[in-house]
Length: 225
Image (cartoon, rainbow, N blue to C red; front, side, top):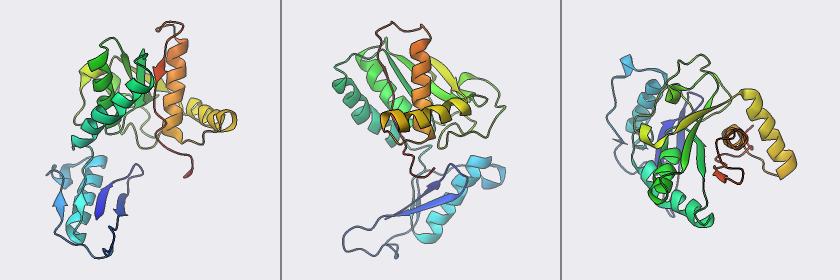
C-alpha cells in the first residue's frame, strides 16, 4: 500500500508498504483522498502540500491519509495511549503536556485523562514566537521543533482540552536534546526535547504541587539529526 502526506519540511512524502506477496511498485487500485480539501490556488503553505499529496495519490494509485483532517488519530490516542498512560501511572497524573502538529496525540490523551480525572492540567507545547494555540501572532514561523507548530490551529482542535500553552525556545530545546542524550541515554529529536523542556518548566513554575507528576511523550528519535 502507498501512503502520501505532507512532511514538516514542505515536501511531499511518499511511503510504501508491501504486504506479503505484493509488488510495492505496482499500485493495486485507484487513488483516493482522505478528504476533499480546498482549492490549491488559494491555499496556504500547508494546504499546498496537502494538495500535492492528493495529486500524487491520484496519479500513482495511492491513498492520501490527510492526517490533519482525519479523526482516526485522535480516536487512536484516546483509546490506547491515554489509557495506557493512566494505567502505568496508577492514575497519579497531575499534568499532561505535548507539542502539537495535527493535535492527535495531545487531544486524544487529554480526552482520555480528563475522562478519568477532570483536574488534570493539559498544556500544549509551542515554540516561542509561534503560538497560535495561545492566540498570539506568529512572529517566528521557522523553528527547530519539526513536525509541530505549523503556525495555525489544527482543523480538529478542541480548545476545551487545553488549559495553557507553554512556550519553549530553540536554545532550550537544543540544550534538553543534548542533556537527554548525554545524561539519560535517550537519543531523541527536537519534538521530544521540547516536550521535556516544557514539562521541566511547568514543574519548576509552582503551578503544580511539589510532588506532582507531569507526563509527556518522547515522540521522535535523534537518528535524522
